Image (tube, rainbow, N blue to C red; front, side, top):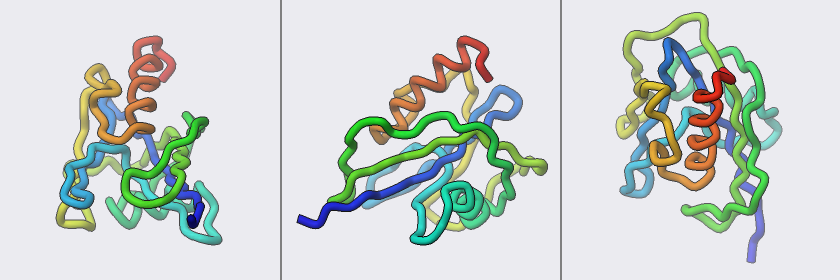
Amino acid sequence: MDKRFNIRVYGIWMHNNKILVNEELIRGKSIIKFPGGGLDWGEGIIDCLKREWNEELSITIDVLDHFYTTDFFQPSAFDNSQVISIYYWVSAAVIPTTFVNSEANERTFWINAADISADTFTLPIDKLVGGMLQAAIAAGRH
């Protein structure tokens, strides 16, 4: 069996008490997740996050504080790999009024921060981060 890692890097952008999320169609299934994506060979994680946001949303972001890195085994739902996801708080100087996604089957939109929970998201690591984010927002830690 080919054992490999799938490293993903995501940004959490909170603006005016709203969190930005992506809806994507992956293998026929609607997925709600944070904006970001996969690390390319030879790329650093911060560069990856900036590239993904620029490619997918045409947004130049500032990467702020680290929020969470996967600390448990998570097999991929889509291939034979172990997923490691890294999340950062991000911001941007320019706030678009609408988002134009590079992929036709994607949609990016704001959700009220008070409505964020594990149930907002589809994939296991994002669900965990959604719950952590809910607790952080309730405690006023962002």
